[in-house]
Structures are given as structure tokens and as C-alpha cells.
Image 1 (cartoon, rainbow, N blue to C red):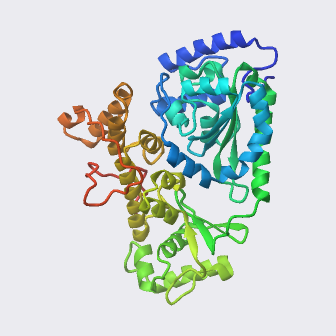
Image 2 (image 1 turned 60 degrees about the horizontal axis):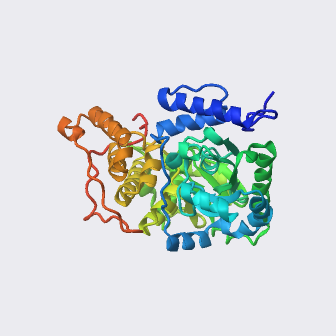
Image 3 (image 1 turned 120 degrees about the vertical axis):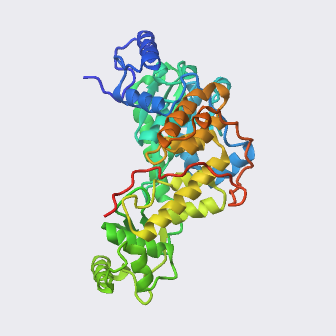
Amino acid sequence: MDDPSVALPGGTDPAERTRVLRRAHTAFTRDGRVEAPVRAVIANSWRRCARARVSPECTPRVELAEAELRSYRAQHPLARVMPVFRDLVGAFAAHGAHLLAVCDARGSLLWVEGESATLRRAEGLGFVPGARWAETAMGTNAPGTAVAVGEPVQVFGAEHFSRRVHPWTCAAAPVRDPRTGRLLGAVDITGGDGLAHPHSLAFVQAVARAAEAQLALLDPLPPPAGDTLGALGRDEALLVGGGAGIRLGRRHSEIMALLAHHPAGLSGEELAIALYEDESVSPVTLRAEMSRLRGLLGDRAPLSRPYRTAAPLEADFTVVTRHLAAGAVSAALHHYAGPLLPGSTAPGIVRLRRRIEDQARAAVIARADAGLLTDWVCTAWGADDAAVWRALAAALPPEDRPAALARVRDLDEELGADPALVRQEPTPAPPPRPRSTPSPSSTPSPGPRRATYPQPARS
């Protein structure tokens, strides 16, 4: 049986496979129909591209100018293992007319290196440092799909969603932080049909593992002063510290998130008001909950009078708000895994959740960057966000605008908007000033506001 991870099974004629795949690509882009021999990993990627309204005629955009790219690369964790990538892949790429490419977790190319003639061909394609090659920007491609699914991927010829990329073949593997498991980006080899060999996929996987091993051996980054709390996009927070993680129940998740947000502490009355919808809840109920939390966490449990964390607690949502305050919208979205404790109805959590989402949403709209806007509407919490879809339509070039406008009309009709406004085409946004943060006085209203993720039923 053929290995589904391999793009070109042994004995397959590359020219014949190319012909069949091009016919299957046409069938999908025209009718939405997947035909054999399209592999499941490619079919799933094509479907994601269709949902993201990616055009098969798409072209890449350079989002990081030279000065910004230089600064960003210098600070990126993968800069520390570029010598490993160059040692293992550089000679192979140069002698085989292939390219070594490294992207970040958003699919933005940071380094593209290799033989000069191949580099010139890639430049004509837009496969250059600073360009965005995420699935949501350029469709199915090895580096973009590898960071989208978190798995090694090999893409042969017409398996690419963009027709411009059909002459190329690539293999990529994700690279993760060995301490936290966080996705850092991907390493990719791009070139001709010869890369469809199963050995190239195994090779790029081995390169990624070598890079992770090197990261583990390097001097560790300064450890956080206390525990860390992951509460975005999940109903049960994860408290990590001392080399171990503890999954908290819903109420305990709410308590720890509120205390992380109020490092100076909260009185029993303040914490109870933030936790319970029913204001008549007895103080005994809160004390019992805190007692159970102490039994779970031991010496890491919150202190009392006032209630506060036993040590500094870094929460993922505070990282997001810190980036937003600095105007680093891309970095903020990288850490924004979804709404804060989305199933919680605790008043304090609901207020904080809405505030964070509103800040992130307003920053994305104000930045008017098609890549960031596309990332937002392709999430579970942003798929029905009419204001962001409208901003995306305005940010796209005219030829790419119809699908986004159609989605705007559908959502506006669901909201009961004025039909005249529904038919009105948005005005393209002016180029934004880099690294700016919208102020309450200068940011235009994004239109009718509604939650962009499923809301828990109120008890």
C-alpha cells in the first residue's frame, strides 16, 4: 500500500502524475470535487483554502520590509539554529538546485537560501524573505501547510493550490520549542520533481528534529519568575510550573485567571462579585472553593487577605494585551489562541474576555493588513465577524474582493442590516502606519457588535 505522506509513490511517472493532478485541481477549483489520486492531506488543505476564499490565481505579498525583517529575524528563536539548517540543508540545496527556506509560525518566510539561478526563479514567484506563504495567503504549499497542521508535509507540483506554484515541489517539517512545545515555524526544501522522493520528506523531518535538539542544548531562555497560565481558547485552564502542568476545573480556572489579571490581589467580596452571577452567594461558598484549590495546588495555591497568587503568574492573555499595547499586532495574534475561557459565565471573566477580544479585533481592523484580517476570519471565533470581513474586503485588491464581499452581504443580512448598506462596496483602506495602536478617540466604530464565538447558556 502507498504511503499517504509521500507525494509520488515508487514507480509513478512524474509527468503522468502531473497531468492527472492538474485535471483534479481543475475539478476542485471549478466544481469543489476531489478526484483521485489526490491525497487526504492535500484534499483537506484544498478545502481549507476554499473556506478561506483563497484564489488559485493568488500571488504572494511581502509583508515584512527589509528593516523590519532584519530586526524580526534577529530576535526569532529559529535564528539560533540557522547554522544547523545551513550545515544540513545548505550543501544539499546548492548542489541539487534546491532552496532552503525557513518560515515562522504564521507562514511568513524568514530565510530563503540556495543556488543563485534557483533563487532568481523563486524571486519571480514571490518566494522571498518577508513574503507570506501561509495557507490562508498562498493556499496549499509545504511550509504554509506544515505550520497549519503541525505535521511534516510534502507537496508535489499541481498539489499546490496556487497554479503559479505548480512547477515546484517542496517538503517541510514544523519546528517546535523543545521546552514548551510551542510551534516556532517550519524548515522547507523547495525545488524540482526530484524532491517528491520519500527520502526528502524523511530528510527534512530529521533536520527539524536536529534543530529542536540544538535548541534544547543551547543555554535556556530565562525561566519565568513564577507559573504560567494558559486560558485562551479553552474552558479548562492549564497551570504550568516546576516542570509539570495541572489542568484546572472551570471554577478554579476562573479564579486563577482573575488573580492573574489582578496581581495586587482581590478581597473576598471583590472575587465573589467577579465569580458568581448570583450576588446572594454566601462567602462560605468561595472559601470552600479556595480550600479545594489549595488541596489541588499545595504551596502554589493562592494566598488570602487579599486573595492573590503565591508567586508571579504569567497568563497567555496578559501576553496578548502587552503586545497589543505595544502595537505588535502580529505577535499578539500569534499568542491569541481564542477567547478567554469561552464557556465561562463568571461576570469578571465575561468582561475581561470581551475587552481582550475587542482590543485584538480593533487592532486587526485598524492595521488593515489582508494577512492578519484573513487569519482572524479563518478562526472559529472570527468566521462570523462581519466587521472584519468588511475590513478584509477593503484591504484586498479589487480582483480578490468578490468572495469577501459576498460573505459580508450574507452576514449583514443575518444581522438585519440596511439592504443599501449591504450592497455598498467598502472603500479600500489607506496604507496603515506600521506598529501603531488604535486609540479610542481615533478608531472608527467597527459596526454592529456581537460576540464572534458561541456563547454559553445562562443558568
